[in-house]
Image: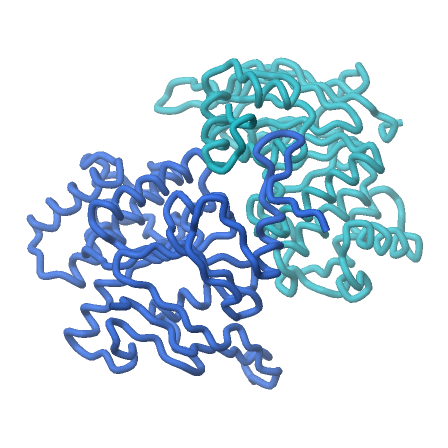
Length: 268
Length: 267
């Protein structure tokens, strides 16, 4: 069963500001893309290809201009009451700017407990226990619950955001450039942590990134977006080669592993 | 003449701060050697002191941080770090959006840079258009009229490089110049820096946490760990025979991203 499915989804923004007189700009068109339970999909593409817009539509933060997003086969627009709550619980997100995604005046414990308060019926004691469990899960200490974001490093706050996303026991987490602000060693640590969680908990992931090197660590499928369309959708295999023009451009731009080596650089 | 400077050297840079009432050393006796036509990479984990070093080299130590040691020489002559800015060194930073004045057009930014060198009027416009063409900005006349919010991150990063060129400073301090850009733009900006090193003999200090960027562009590498230099050498040596533990960790983490490397390339 497809957990979350975009069907012929398009998104158009009207530019020209307040008076809306400018021409319409189409950001996404004809997107058919689904994520199955437990699947891990990488969504790649250049800046402006529509990756983050698609993520916002999948999260229900914006409505598509055309087409439908389905959660467990039901259109997002049709979800009411308990069904809507189930969707909100099931699909979580981690954004790129972790410090901007937490309230600097709230202690870490409160930040992680926030979705528990709104999306579950856990009592105060149970929430505190769950927070301690989540902090351990992401490699932090239960004692960190008393800290403020300003007392932690960027990498630690990003782990807090991951713990918050995991808190309501979601079926899918969307990672919108969620590791891009970390240094490379931390990026790898966080991705390996997520891959481990995926194995243990069966959580599905959508990893939005522009760094193809990171993808095999977490993902088993890759979709390439170019100018608002899915131009390639294939499994991640050893020695992955992308076929689309946009895929070629991304692959040719991969940094070399060693001085004097250019991987995937094609001749002709 | 400062524009003829060919060797920029930093010795014994020491930066301290106070935390919980106790002195804490952030950068400890660091030395750097920049030469024209060469790219020197300064690498290390987050918090190792890379960006602080880059700032201190320009006399821009942030509040609360004290410089207790360090000497900058240009071609062997002692120079105040503040005297380097815009004359000996130009800067490209990570977040291009915060490096521009949001209320000013690109033309105003270019005029300001050139006026500092006494170049105004038609000559200023001619030079601005030439520098913008050199960094690959399409239709530079149109771009001159734009404000930062009307431009993409990649365009702004190119404009920052164009402004650096207008200063005609012989050295470029590039602090994570491509970290915020997508892969394709990153490759373009790195190729552009490489070309400026070759064509103009620019000397570059490249601050980065990505060993892929180092492999792509650097001639020599200095590795920082908790404010101390733990390794320094030619780029091939640092990749093939990293001596210090922090260097080995950086190289190993980087190479782990290339599972398809042929066996002869593996460490």
